[in-house]
Image 1: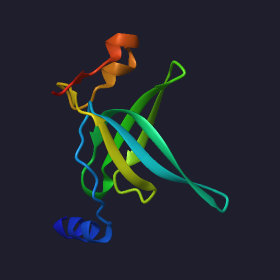
Image 2: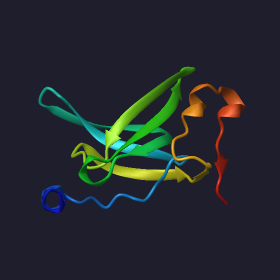
Image 3: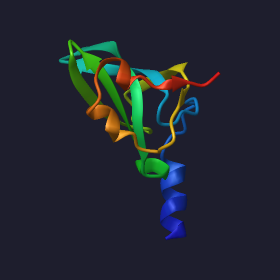
Image 4: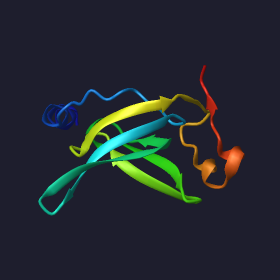
Length: 114
């Protein structure tokens, strides 16, 4: 099993992404291919969870768009991710904050780390 982990860590390219955790508000810039064109789009929201480890790690971001909750899952080692910016550091007491799905308005806010 150690051999598999060693080979997968060598084959996946390492990116210099900032350290973030659930509760943080981040912006992910990623490329979209439409035909033969490429453009950069961003997704800004709160990190709900980080899941997995190593090359298979993913994170889920949730945002509210026109009063509808939108969630997107990104793999950490995705080649489409250009950069990640951290907007706010959040203070939560859980690793997976799915309870935000039920909350609306001011109740859905996350306390900021000072």
